[in-house]
Amino acid sequence: MDDTAGPFQRSLVEGGILVESGIDGLYGFSASYEKILRALQDLVTESGLDQKAFAVHFPPVMPRQVLELTDYLRSFPHLTGSIHTFFGDDRAHAELLALLDSGGDWPDALIPSQVVLRPAACHPLYPTCAGQMPDGGKRFEVHGWCFRHEPSLDPARMQAFRMHEFVYIGEPATALSHRDSWVERGVKMLTEFGLEVNVVSASDPFFGRLGKLMAANQHDQELKLEIVTPITSHELPTAVMSANYHQDHFGAAFGITSADGALAHSSCIGFGLDRIVLALLRAHGLEPDDWPRALRDRLWP
Amino acid sequence: MDDTAGPFQRSLVEGGILVESGIDGLYGFSASYEKILRALQDLVTESGLDQKAFAVHFPPVMPRQVLELTDYLRSFPHLTGSIHTFFGDDRAHAELLALLDSGGDWPDALIPSQVVLRPAACHPLYPTCAGQMPDGGKRFEVHGWCFRHEPSLDPARMQAFRMHEFVYIGEPATALSHRDSWVERGVKMLTEFGLEVNVVSASDPFFGRLGKLMAANQHDQELKLEIVTPITSHELPTAVMSANYHQDHFGAAFGITSADGALAHSSCIGFGLDRIVLALLRAHGLEPDDWPRALRDRLWP
Image 1: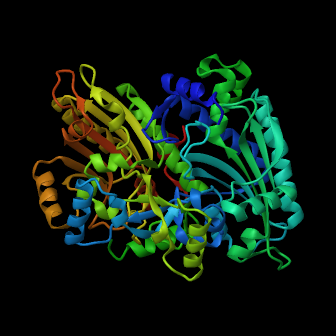
Image 2 (image 1 turned 30 degrees about the vertical axis):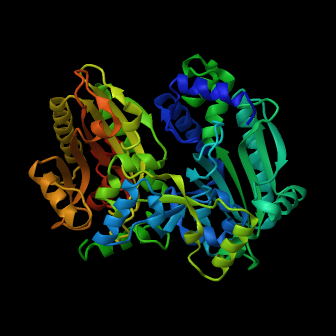
C-alpha cells in the first residue's frame, strides 16, 4: 500500500460505499457496491457458459482437514483462520464469563472445532473430486467468500472477500491451456470495462525463510499469472485476477487421477470480485449512474 | 431431528443437491439449489421495497467486540465461532508443523484474532448505528452467511447458512409492529409457495441452567415468534422464519437512542433462506422444473 491508499479508502467510506467496522480490512458494503458485484458475478458466469463447467457452491467455512491436506499451513500459516468454540459445562461457562468480564483474552478458553475459514474459493472442491476424472478432464465453477488474516488499511486487501473461479482438473496440457485462455478472456473483459491492465508473472505470499524459496520457484516456473490494475497506486497495481497452474499438487493431496491413471493436474483462475468493483469505482467514479453508458449496459443489460 | 431426517438428507445427497464435506452440517450446494436460493433472496428484497429500508451487506466475519457487546457469549457460547491464526516466526512455524505432522491438535498453537464468525445477519449492523435514530426510527435490510457451531445430520440445521433480515431500530411500538407485520408478510409469501406454515411463540437455544430461565422468560413475554413448516418431520416442523422483538437490548449494548432520547428498541425478522429452499424441495420435489407453474413464475418471473 502506498500513501494514495488512504485518500481512496476515505472517499469510499465518506461516500457511503464502504462502512467501517473498527477492524482493518473488514467492511460493510453499500447496496450500490453489491449491485456492481452481483452484476460482475453474472457476467463472469456468462463468460464461461461455453465451458459447460460444473457449478457447485461452498460456504465460507470448510473442513479443517482440507487445510491440512492442501499444505496451506506449511505455506500460509499467517493467513489461516481456524474456528474455535466452547465445549464446556455450566462451570466452564462461568469461568469463560469471568475471563470476559475481567477483560481477559476469553477466546483462549475455547477449543478448536473441525472447521476453518476457506482461504480460496476452490479449496473445498478438490476433496469432492477424489478418484478418476473423465477423459479430457473436467471443468468447475465455484465462487463465494474467502478469508485471509491480513489486516490492512488498503481497501483492496480485505480480510473477507469474494472470488469467482473456473477450475480445470485432468491432463497437464489442458490445465495449462485452461489457465492461459482464461487470462486472455480476463484481459478482454477488464479492458472492455475501461480498466488499464497488465499480465505479470507472480508468486504467492509464502511464509518465512523457506517461503522465499517457494515463491522464487513459483516465479521461475511461471506457475502463477496475475492480471493487475491500479486501485490504490499506479506504481504498485493490484492483482484483480489470479491464474494458477498447480501441476499435480491437488491431485496428489486428494487422490485425483486423470483418465490415463496418472495424478491429475489442475489449474484455476479467479476473478477477485471485490477488487474488480474497487478498480471500477477508482477508474469511473463512485457513482455508477455516471459511468460510461457502454459499461452500464454491459453490467446491467 | 426425527428418523425421517436421514432419508431426506440422503435423497438430497443422492440427487446431487447437497454435496457432503465429511463434516456434519456443512455442504456444497448444486447450481439448482443456488438458483432457488437466489430467486428467494430477490423475492424477499422485492417484498420489502415499500419499507424503503437502508440496505447494507456484511461479510461472514465480524469484529470480536460485537460478540462481546451483544452478550452472545453469555447466552450462546456453544454456538460461537472465534477465528484464531498464526502470529509466530520461523521457529514457531517449525513447531506448528511438527505438531501437525505428529497428528497433534495444531490449532491449539494458534492465537485469537480480532474477528469472529457472524452468528446472525443483523449483528454487525448495530454498532454502525451508535447515536440517535431519526424521528420514527429507521429500517434496514441485511443478508448473508451466518455461522453456528451445531454439527447435525439434519440438513435443516447447517453450521453455515444464509439469513435475509429486515431490521427496525427506533420506538418500542413500531419495533413491535415491524415484527408482527413481517410475520404476516412471511406467512402470506410462504403459503403462496405452497408451504403449510404455522406461527408459534418460540425461544432461543440459550446455554446451560441459567439459559433455561432466559428461554422461559423470552417465551412468556412472546419476544420471539417463528414461522415453522415441515422439512424433516411433520411432528417437529422447522423454523424457516424468525421474528424477534429485542426491547432495548441492542440499543443499550451499542448506545443507540430513539429520536426522543430514550434507548432505542429494535426488532428483526429473518428469512432462513437455506431452510426455505429445503422446505420447497421437500414439498414440491427435487426437480424445480417440475414444480407448480405458479411457483416457478413467482420465483423466476
